[in-house]
Image (cartoon, rainbow, N blue to C red):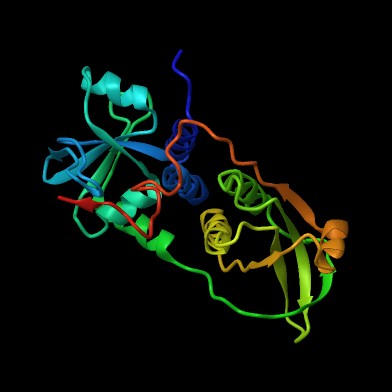
Length: 262
């Protein structure tokens, strides 16, 4: 039996409940977070590549797979490919009128039209606002939907090595404003924007309407961390493992520096 991938599971859940907006959002989140293998017409030239584009009726699609073996099985021969994150691929294709043929030939496959690719790219491009406020009171989180807790747990599992852990808590600021705060402890220098974006995406793709969550960054030695540890819900981020996977800095893995079509 073929092993189900996280993308397979999310797609099956979406297709089983086509009216469930949350299932749809979770599928697109898994797609954005996935490492994808894009079939090419020829070898990539630096950051320039020529994807294989297939017409289907009046639409055009590129072929992407979430496992290298699936691409090889589909091509039935060695074939050139590029490895990109789903978010990097969406950014690259936005506005090009090209959709995604995801895992063709696999048990779970889907054609995603160009309009949906454009929507995904625009959603991922949304950046959280930056503000500076001083927490006055830290409390336990209250009233948060389980959907958001699960979305954060899944999303932060993809942020390996970017921080040690995070606390979710209630917060009252010196100006009187109340909110919920996701506090990252000991973030890697320069990782703050990526972590803030990850938190924002977890909120967006959880399906919660009009949800608000603040994000903060602290050192373990900061006095506020004692209160965070006492009352907050802790999320441990995975440690970065050195594997054969493509590093985050490789072409196509950074949505701010997508590869170029040629």
